[in-house]
Amino acid sequence: MTEFAGWDMPLQYEGVVTEHRAVRNQAGVFDVSHLGKLRLGGPSARTALERALTADLATLEAGRAAYGFVLQDDGGCLDDVFVYRLGESQWLVVPNAANVAVVKNALRAAGATEVEDAWDRWAILALQGPSSTAAFESVWPSRGVSELRLHAWRTVEELGADGFVARTGYTGERGYELYIAWAQAEAAFERLLDAGCTPVGLGARDTLRLEMGYALHGHELGPEINPLEAGLGWAIAWNQPFRGREALLAVRGSGPSRSLFGVRCSSPGVPRRGCEVIAGDDVVGEVTSGNFSPTVGTGIALALGPAPAPEPGAEVAIKIRGRLIEGAIAKPPFIERALTKSNK
Image (cartoon, rainbow, N blue to C red):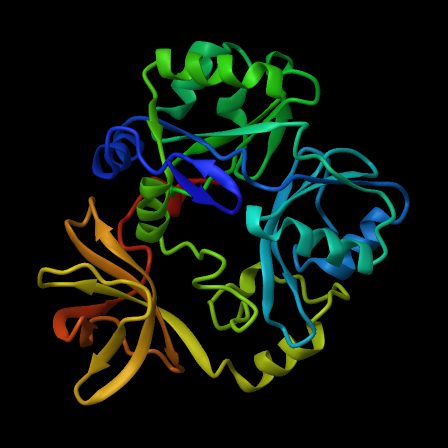
C-alpha cells in the first residue's frame, strides 16, 4: 500500500510485472475510486462546462463521454478530465484525485451553480484487458457491453443506484470502468476476481499507460506544460470559449516551443523523471516519465524538449546517476495494440 493524493492505494498485489502482463494478456481489475467525481446540473451546466473545459461538448449526447483539459489563462494545464453526459442537463466530470478542488473551483468560476462533490456516490473499478468483455459478461450477463463503442456508457442495474459501465480506460487495452454504488463495490470486486481477473495496483497502472504514451498530469501535463506541447491538440474544441483559448491560439499560430517525444533504451537501465536526454554533446530533453517496460523488455521514457523533437530512430542517451544509457527516439505508443488500430 502507498499514500496517493490523500488515499491509501494498492501499489502492487502479486507484483508489477505479473499484474502488467495479466492486463496485456487476459484481464485485470483496478480500484480507482480515488478519482474525483463532480456532478453538475441545472441550466447553467452546459455553458459553464464549455467555458471551463476544452472537451468537445457540442455533439456530446447522453450516453457518451469526452476527454479534455481544464486550463489556466496562459494555457497551462490545471488538470485533464473525462466528462460524461448523464442526461439532458446532467453531467459528470472526473478529475484526477489531487485536483478535485482545483477543478471544482474552475467550474464554479465558469458559472456552474450546481456542482456536487459526488465522491461518495460511486466507487470505480477499471476492468481492462483482452478478456475484459468475457469477464464482465460472466458476472453480469446480457448487459450488452460488447456493443459499447469507445467512450460510450450504459446503465447497469446490478451496479446499484445510478450505476453504469463506461468503455473507457488508461491501459491501451479494451476495457471498461464500472461506476458502482459503494454498497455493491466490494462484492463486485470479489466477483470479478472469482471470474479470473487479476487485481492490479498503481505500479502496473503506470507501466501500462507509459507503454501507450498516455500523459499523466504532473508529468506530461501541468501548469507549466500546455496540451499542444504534450501533443494533445486533438482534445481541444477550438470553437468553444474555454479559459486559456487565446493563449493556445497564439501557441498554435507560432508552433509550440517544446514537444514531447519517446525514448526506447537499448542498454540496461531504468530512466526516471528528471533525467537528461542527450544527443551528441547537446541536451535535447528531460524525462517526464520513465520505467521498465515488461512488454518491450527494456527501459522506456517520455521526455520534453525544445521543438522540433529529434526524428524517430535518432540515437540518444539518457543520463542516470552519472552514467549514460543508450537508446533511440521512438514515437509512442511503444507497443502495438488492437486498441490503436480498431478500437472505435
